[in-house]
Image 1 (cartoon, rainbow, N blue to C red):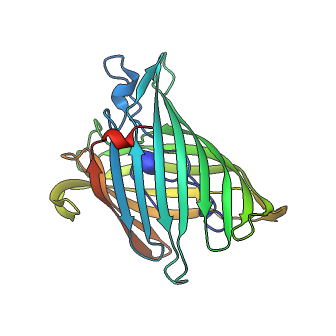
Image 2 (image 1 turned 30 degrees about the vertical axis):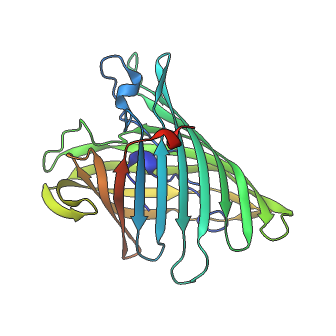
Length: 278
């Protein structure tokens, strides 16, 4: 599935763990006014709700805390609660809670900027529970604000590398039954193409948005589950992000894989309140 920028899941196994999403890229990697936090999606923090239909319905609630300047970098915390299910199985959804620490390193001295992410993840499915950590690093275009969104324009791509390690527990007994190791996963976007602005229906009403189309290739690499090597194959998705300048956010994504299309909607964006402080 595809999510706008920092909420985008990094490559993770969709079977045992459906669990962990990788590095949220929380920034536009371009320094403005020498403030590394000027590039964060939500400068004052925010709460974002997303819903997806299709073969794998999903609900995701993300809280981005107010970012903090730390030297030449910017740090922020993300709390993500999600539920994902396979509609065909009609079983209880996988519930995942993630606590993310994100470091934004702006470009400097000719070197490109990047985003580093680390998360503690707890996930619970029908039969097993997982607990572990993910680490990731991303480079490239993670946000559409301040990009040239003229029709026909080609935007840069992105690359994300990540790794994850989980302990697997039997849900009923709580006994450890094995580990899941993902030492090297990658996500690649070569480039993006900007389409024609148009009004679309969103959860917040009819809004003028820009379609941005691209191909995303995700490779989980070698997996080890309970000591067994699990072969994986790269997945290829054709994605259209509907970026809405008035909201400064991707309000809808259409994701095509194996001839099937899933729609992901941003259903609400709200300011933080006192109960959201960490």
